[in-house]
Length: 74
Image 1: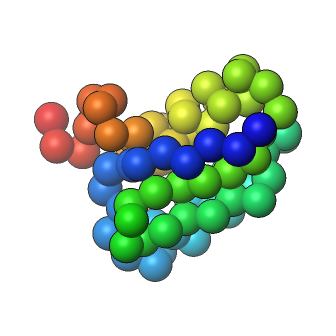
Image 2: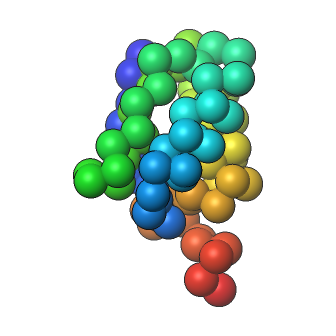
Image 3: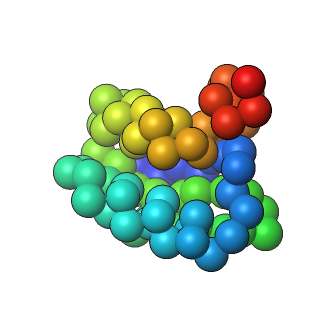
């Protein structure tokens, strides 16, 4: 399955590299694409559990999905 999510705090190429590298390391996550202009991350995943894990990793890195608490601005 493939999913595209809008994320918070995506501001530079270093953010893109961090997200791409970290998500690519996850098992069952592949073909990671980060769009700086659209503030989105797209990736393929195997199961709902894999998607949830990727969401938690994004949040831990400081890039929560839009609509989730933004720990950098609390």
